[in-house]
Image 1: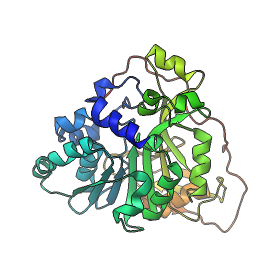
Image 2: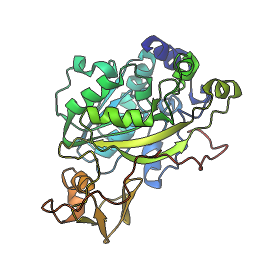
Image 3: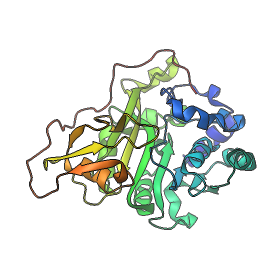
Image 4: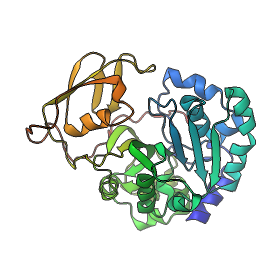
Length: 345
């Protein structure tokens, strides 16, 4: 599988126009504040971008960030601007051709930004222990449509857990299926290269994350994928695929379910790109200045992380009121908002 992916992304694909599905194309509406950040990135880097979402969580100044499967470096160079000169971004990829593009334009970006705070390493995301990365040394780990390509996803999550600081987070976009994909899809080289063959059944991912210490995976956004090639669509059968962004917090005290302790938070409106509301995930859109009731896990995700300075906190864990209303285990993705004809970035 490593050889297949290296060949597909290093030799067969020369730009995002060569992709045969929308699985690895980002049709997410880009926020205004991010547009000038991407405008600073070299065109050669942008043209070799194969991501499936935006992996720019808020509050990044001074953070140390690891990008798994960084490819030509688009997200590395975007994040480099957001963490600033006091932060650092490390990109890891196994494909020589992609890394060559990323490194070739490092001096260009250093001059453009006024500082050089990025490093690129060649390696496998299943073997991060071989790269000399110190445990608990990263505030944030990101990945953009890459985990599905890994033949050992358990090893990837295990390493991410080790590398994150307490209160750090794994913020990433990837492709998921509404069911376990059949062998004929898994073993199809084109479907695998297009990020469909290696896609996890969404609930298998949730359970895998729990095994590695991420008790409460939070879905940020999602969209159904359009497989426009009729031959590839036929090979996929009845499986439905989704691009989704999740955030997993490295907080050992998180519980497996959302429990109610009578807590609430108030967002101060102090994050520059989000003055009127803060969106933690798909179900937590917190308006500035308004008391917002939360479960114990959400309280900790805000209180025990870099986000704490932007909130006021109400309550503690001294009294328990049972399960938090509205929690469930149904398909989390939206199935009715496919935007036909939406372009790839």
